Image (cartoon, rainbow, N blue to C red):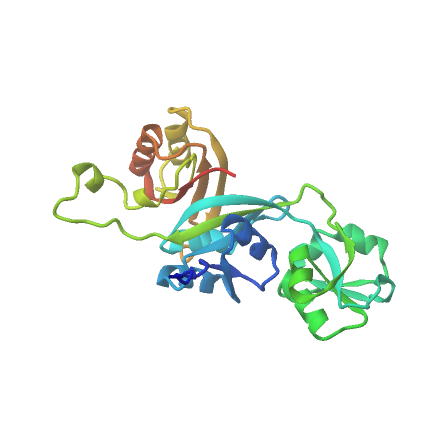
Length: 298
């Protein structure tokens, strides 16, 4: 007797932006064979993760040229999510138009302002082409192809050309060939299950313990310092005293509290005793500490 093969639904992963974007490409790299859910706003991405309508989300957190994606950094602190992985994507910008359009006919190129800014040399060598800001890289290709614009193109990745059947007129138009974007894979930070027979070691573990993936060797945290002399020095010393290497430190204004700042730190340790001791020590000198994620370094 033949048994019908059971179809397994693809894991839903949310991204901000249109299908065919760099976030789409990163999501397929981080979660192979996933079903990508496009969201118009970053807040919607985090809403979907928290509500459980998607299993995870892939968000850009930092570009090697443009710096931190401020809105996503703020949302990581404000929302109930946990970072489980990171991925570095090489950003290659391409000029993409509707089929049949030639580069000589293009008079304007649409794309996200950050992408346009990363392609200054292209516009310097094509003075007859006007850069036009658009809401999204992939969205610009979607627009010029859907409208069959004869004198316009978009700047985006190859994924966008495939997604919307666009024609690549020129590839690799970014100024800096070492242009990378760092992406995070985030999931809902569920509270740890409790029960009458829970082990004492489990009860004392932090709520994110079971969300830490195998091979995790990097931690991202956010903390706010008390307004005391030497507070920043004391906060950094908790890592130095334990020979824990920091790969990033950055401060950002705290929403709703003018002239107060949150420090974002990445350090190169997983969930081990030195890291746990450092975080406990940090809690003694900081107003609050939030572990944003513990994950394998890219």
